Amino acid sequence: MIKTWRPTFFALTLMIGAFFVLGCASGEKKNQQTSENKADIQTELSTGNMGKPSSVAGITWTIPAHWKQGPSGPMRFATYIIKPADSDQDSAECAVFFFSGGQGGSTQANLDRWIGQMEQPDGKNSAEIAKINKMTSNNMLMTMIDLAGTYKVSGGPMMQVREKKPDYHMLGAIIEGPEGSVFFKLVGPEKTVESAYKDFMTMVHAARPKTI
Image (tube, rainbow, N blue to C red; front, side):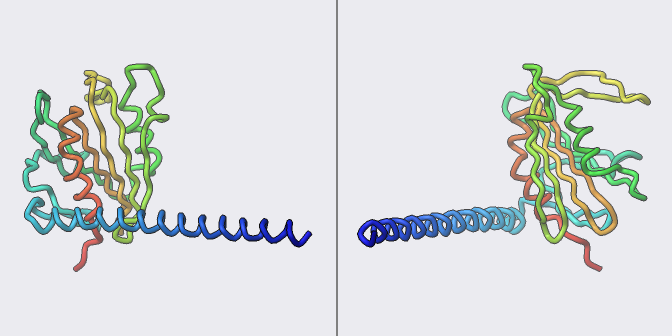
């Protein structure tokens, strides 16, 4: 029994050691990726790629320098226009929404509404394809969505679907700030949104509570 037990114990020790090393390596890689993401955001902010600051609901963010300021409205706090990239014909639009008095609905309700604005050419359910990620950024809860497909443009009093735009992409971020949630939604042609991806991520990840 002693001869049988010792090799088994030795092998078990080696396996535990191997799992420990792999776990440490995985943790180091994750920390390295997090540090790199933070470094990218700091680089964007420090090299002048970001423009004027803006704020609402106790949240402050910095607008990418080459995004054009568009009109605001009763339903949106701000609009940013991103010029078409490559062969795209349409511009992309980043809308910022804030509804005072908690009238904007829950985070999940807004995610469901945004998902409903995209349909898939192959008939699949957009809810099964949408990439949703929840995190804490600068001590604020942020929920993000990444979804591509055919965008259903709606408008009018009843918000009827007026047009369908194939090969579109949506990036969204809902930041729960000190005075309520702020909704950032970037929608446009695939290539144009891809070209604005880094700017959008830098803007929402660098958003922070407003200080007096």
